[in-house]
Amino acid sequence: MGYRPLDLPLQVLLPYIGRTEDQLARLDERTRRSPVGAGFIERGHFFDSAASMWVSGELVHVEDLVLHDAHMDVRAPTHELVVAHSILRARRRIAGSDPGWALSDAGISALRGRPADAVAEKEGEGTIDDASAGGALDLDTDSDDDEFAQHFADIDAVLARSERLLTQHNGKAAPTPPAKVEASGRDPLIYDQDWDEAERLSRWQDAMSEADALPPSLGAAILWDAWETLEPLQRQHWLGPILIGSYLRSRGKVASHLLAFNVGLKAISRERRRSPVHTTRLIAFLDALSSAAEAGMKELDRLGQAKDQMERRLRNRRSSSSLPDVLELVLSRPIVSAAMIAKAAKVTPRGALNLVSELGVREMTGRGRYRGWGVL
Image (cartoon, rainbow, N blue to C red; front, side):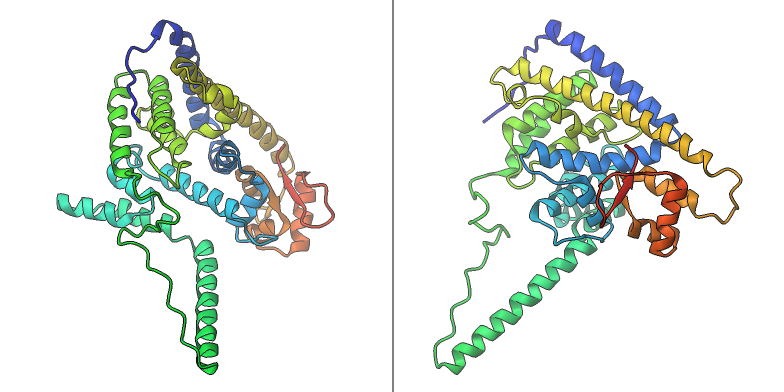
């Protein structure tokens, strides 16, 4: 399996490149200058994480992801929700790092969940980058997911101890422990041992050097096509679109935030994204970038109008009012619950409902229990 971005039909691609470059530049400038830019960036992490699962064929509700991130799940988190939260944390980690960090060997190693590789690489150079090493640990050790993992590990230990006691009581030999995972740390029942991720990643990075000589949007489309073709990672294919956003950020095309590329991919049919014709795929990926930029600008318009409307209700309020805190929370989350508002504003749940009523936020769930509010 290989990839060679040569002999590109630039005459065919130029109209799409021009439109995409213009829309990405407009989105970047508007986000940088917008008074709701910070809320737009945070909301984008949630929408892109849910869209990433949708593109891969899984459904995760944005409201469930918001509640899981706030440690306020209304039900046990599913495997898909945990993966979506990993995407969310990866986006936050990349957005908070230097523009080129995620595309470096250390950054990719950390995002793959192998911080030791990143640290070893830095040690080979004689220095350790605290941001890279520490960021990898932050990404890998989320308190919520680790708490569930610890509970499951404790349950497994109790079950194993009980089984040993029962076998000893019945006079039977204790069962042999399961075979250990191979030295690489990868279970052969889950991972294909012939899948050389390091070699595939190296080939993808080679494609990056060729993409650097092209316009940023076309370079990003080529990199995404290479990621889809090479499939460097077995279990973390979702990392590709985030790296594309990081690539645009490192090229300075979308420097104000991490582009929600998956939101744009949702608007492109699978037939175009998986077309056997190379040019068709590149045009589809350019259209996805354009759709992501267009959706971002519409979101900025909605948030700006909502902020103006809600700020009218803040006039003549006392300086100690909790409404400004609720306003910032509503603008930074796709949906908020009474418990989230109570925690942010440091009020009771009943007080949170009063604040929602005063702010005039739209109720989005239509339920009597577990209600949520947000900007439509």
